[in-house]
Image (cartoon, rainbow, N blue to C red; front, side, top):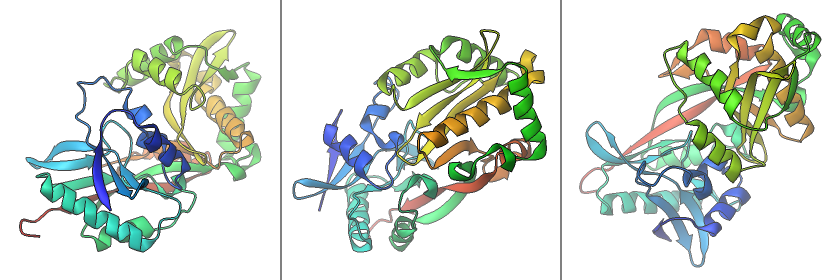
Length: 319
């Protein structure tokens, strides 16, 4: 096996990610390439065996406790190792050994890797976690995320109060349609976040760029009331199984119509009809501390708790 650095775009990389059992949009070079060139120093690695990829690892250097670590993700929600569909435990362990040797040779003090929740993988097994722990990685944190299993989603299964709110949104005339542009949605998003002393992670221009790059994977659902946008949900189709709610917002002046509940329920039903298995409503914890307001709201949609796991590897001198 050989570990090589991939510069710029590489169609083979993205094809490998989409064909893999656990790759996501965040692992593709097409997604990472939307960032301005000066924002991140990417060191995207591929493990080759002969003329084929065995594994890809998107990432780059970052400071951890004052030392240079290889971090994955960089510029994305999660990252880590993406293996071919025919991978086995022996291949994983050999790949991780080669990755460790590359880090040492390149002067990294270690690695920090955050994996997607298991619901993003069609195999849903723990082979990668086992291989990482067996290779010297330590599990250092878990962040909770709320995931709806769409097959079970139906109006009658919702919490009674939420069911009433969804019906109220519909009776009030709130409709949910594909968005035609990011502008009205983004204005509401900024207002929502400003009330919490925050700003969107992305600019309107960046979100427009993402929607242009991925017209079938970056999908904006707008809630409208009398032809006025009153909220929305920007969804990222991360892979064939799971869709992530990238941004959710509603107009504070229209909350009496239960806009957010109506939008999310309609999103879920449309995604279910399209054949997706999971809808990730996003994290409900920071540094292991649960945001109980978010947790209560998302649990009303029959959401289950999955975790984004972070692993750290230390490269010891002489090893």
